[in-house]
Length: 439
Image (cartoon, rainbow, N blue to C red):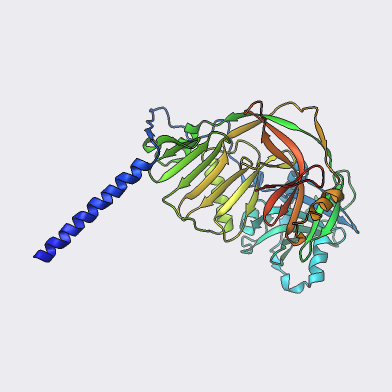
């Protein structure tokens, strides 16, 4: 009997201690204000936002045409879209894994052989995703991913061979295509044409060839007027029951929580950070990750600027889409350039994005003449702390910064950027200057 009383007393003490800790945790949180919803306040969409398809977000990063020992290419958005639309009219035969039949020399020749056309992708692309954009004769496609497509000529005029290649894994899937309009593609990309610019090739040690535009264009410094998506729009869109959400503030940010999820909006950068604390991260097949990520943003019409799929790999729960301005990617050190997600088992775990809507102002008179591709590449390689093994890409892009005079105006200035050890870094325009790291 005494033993039962002791157990009951200990249990009661534990309950009291638990309640005390819970009370303490809530008291140390920011002071929140309960938000009530009116009957009319049910809109969970971003005003002016759009819903997009995978074909709007998945484009090659560049096209390279190999003609003898010379290389020509383009990053033109119009050309990239034309190629994907053209490929969408082709019929693809069942892809066959031919990886084991290729030697190292054969693999290299496949990528850069004469009259071969390479399409580069910034992200891994699953076959189950690309089959929603291309027409395969068979329903079943390989359970694999690729990051390049190589198109080569066949003997018959209306046929060609297409290779889906994962460069890092040395995986190659061969398909034959048949299309009456193939002549237009061949004349546009397998021969010298005004759509293509000369590129130089650099052999990365123990890696693939890196292609850099030889003569970069003179680009205009762009300015953009910004509008901001109202915080209440995100509250309505991201929380499962907005009526339970309370508002507070902490360290220059507005915070919203329903007890299991937290949304923070930075007052300086406009970055929205949403975390679902009830979830834990869990990877899923890459095609499912891509599909879920697009659907999630579509559900609140969250595509307000131009984005492209930029980073997603098999076995990961993370995916990101980068802001683009015309033909070129945008980079920003505060994270305003990327829409990213991390997924859990059932629902999204983390969602980060900008709340700004960009509207380009008329072109300014300021122009930037970037150094040529060879000089820019030499400037990268000549830095003391650079190991060429970790250099994987190099391209022109815009650095987006906030104008000091007005926080509502963003400046977009062109620079060379290079991908080094998984991070994108800005090369200063003096060719030998100090570089700034950007994610």
